[in-house]
Length: 291
Ligand code: BTN
Image (cartoon, rainbow, N blue to C red; front, top):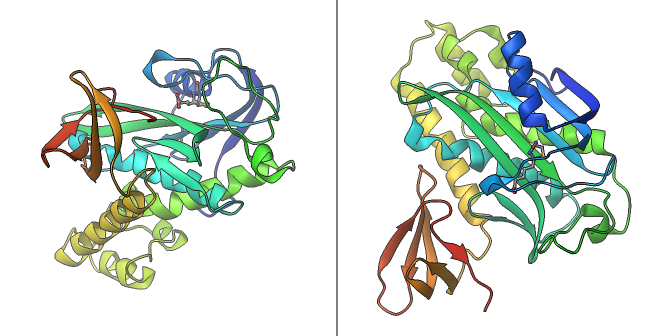
């Protein structure tokens, strides 16, 4: 899949691009990388059953279809890491202040500029299909008061941005990170040459291995682990509040802690300030608190 090869459908209005893509899939088989973009969502969906509101024609609202290979349920957070990093890399072109707020909110300083809703289908403990829905606030100049802390690229840069170009950059960034997890790498077919799989090793080396039999071997496993590790490290170093102690709240109350790790499952591991206790949280079990 080259950078111009993504199958992108740009629509005027749907209820939610995640819903639209899933409904479309019920009607016909779709290729990995199929992307649905829309100018306006009537019922945009956010995390925790919330909505996602966005002014018509201003922002980037899209869903991307994936068929990941050999990602176990307890490692599924890798897709969140990749999608968050790709959004961050798009926005890094305009400002130095983009961070990923665990699990996958994209922040500019103390404000949210993008969010994502990833819906995975599972079979026998592995992800078979993923719909990655992303909303990036691009050209919206003001937001309804009820939104807690929104920001847009327009507010940061004072100018309009081309949504088509931003989407293109996103897809390039996404697939350069995701390449190592793709099915075609396992099949060892020629498509491999079209990906940038060379972040930790050269493309020819990986291809050569597959050309010589297409078998999973030690060399390949090492490369694959290296790719994952690079993604883990990039995610960790992009985290909001990654340094120092900050306030959090769980069902027992407020406490100060430092981020120790984000596990492959996506659990957040915090180390408390008072007793150095290590606590592990799933999404929704802990909240960031502003002092
Ligand atoms: C969140 O942070 O709450 C997640 C927001 C996800 C919004 C995007 S917009 C495109 C896609 N379609 C949806 O209905 N939701 C996601």
